[in-house]
Length: 172
Image (cartoon, rainbow, N blue to C red):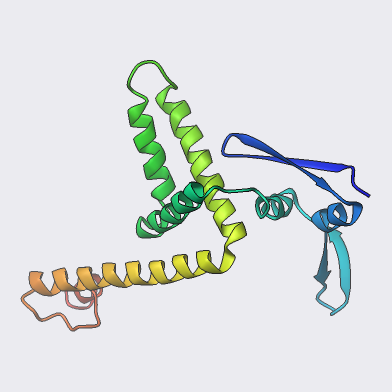
């Protein structure tokens, strides 16, 4: 029996859903296994409910493409992509006639985080692969660059698998 209306506001827009009693119960409860091996039904947190609702927020093809780019940007910038984007929007707000830079930053940062949250909820496997592989390759690339610079700075004596920092610590 429908009649359970729930809503969520993301990216500045409010989305409402009519849930059956069963869907509402599934949204607000979860089964957990206790340390002694028994199972118990407990209430979900507002954060868990939000993630469940984000799975149903409709995205346009353009928003999905922007979301994929935002995920990659966030990985490449070691988790700071949303802050960088929001900062650029804040700079553009210095032009008279719109939001203040602070308001522009807060709005843009919230929208970017909402989009990233939606992408994580709707595409958990793709998101995990993007963040995992991108993070590994980005970190490995940074280490390789640091090692290369370290070898150049000390005349090639730095072993291949050691960083300039650890070499300096072991060879003062």
